[in-house]
Image (cartoon, rainbow, N blue to C red; front, side, top):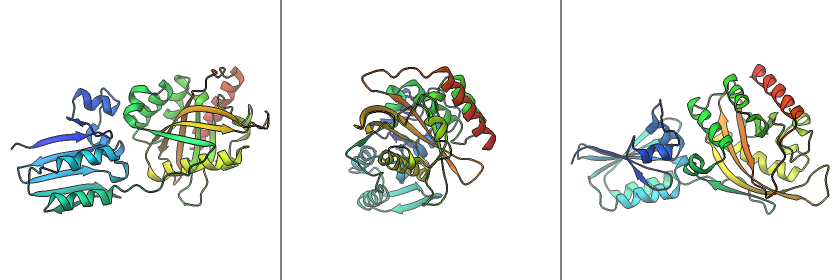
Length: 310
């Protein structure tokens, strides 16, 4: 048996490195980086290798592995091609463990891939988690573009991020929150695009420097803040379809329903603070009006201040 290398996507599909199917799942047709390593570290892919007819090696980042990928590997190990199995997994650094049976290997994989509790559930707010394959193929252009920028920047925030968003007219639908390194640190607004008006038409000015949990609808703010903290802590993106009923501070007392898709991306900075960007697109039945020119100008000014302070 010759050496064999294949990958399992987060949806549990087998693909060959460099193949069209792999590049489609990656969401980047022309990667100029270690695409296989990136997919394993960031997108929940599992790398499966048979080495020298002796060892089956399974490489993964357990925190990102979804159940379909794990089940695909377990099914493959029902008829093991070798007698030794090595699990190479990423924690704070790469670790390696050897097992002499597929049963022990599967048990250890399940132990590693147990996911911690996610952000809280709410009757008024629902976040439907989507996978990265759907992001690359189906998501709105603002979300796809920001995801590509995050990948090519290796998750490091600098002035080019704002320039990229401005050149593509993405700023009106972008929000940036800063999250400190301590578990008690609440996310703080660093930038709010002028097209994000759910909290009021002027909140993209008034909210800068405030904690996310202190938006006019406090229940919504506390719910959203947990997602920002979770993304900052994990260092991994999150793509959702959100349905929420939000109280408009200038409108009627009854909360109004909105629906939008969002992408949360964590960015490393020169300090201990992690910047989490939100890119979103409204999916509500009635189309949202385009932001006024003044809002766009105000958003650009806020963005330039952010770049100078970062």
